[in-house]
Image (tube, one colour):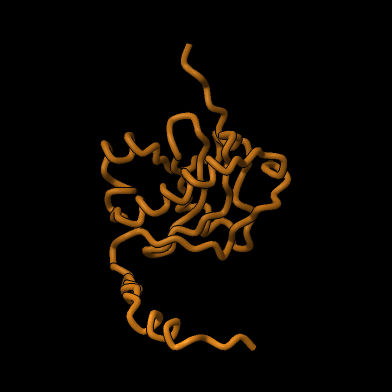
Length: 149
């Protein structure tokens, strides 16, 4: 065991203490994210390329969306357009559903949002104020992204 000198003990006592962590309460009506139904191994997305930069943008995006209300996300046209938010229309998608038990219930309130115009999508569904992330789609595979000419 290494013994500390009196000066080292004194230094530890006089060092400023870090501020206590701020615990954020769940705000009703705002988006909160859950990963209970996250499927990282779906065969349709399994060989997708995830870069560290993409992961960083994803986390920033999730943090930003937690400041949004459910109403903004689902109803505000200008918000939806600027944030690349869309309901998932399964008949136009490359897959027919999330494939989760009782999938019909989950598929009815299915949504996607983007990191940016062409940087992929996050797919999931709402139950109350919680958005359950099911798939990460960095290559925009669920719906083919058509690049402008």
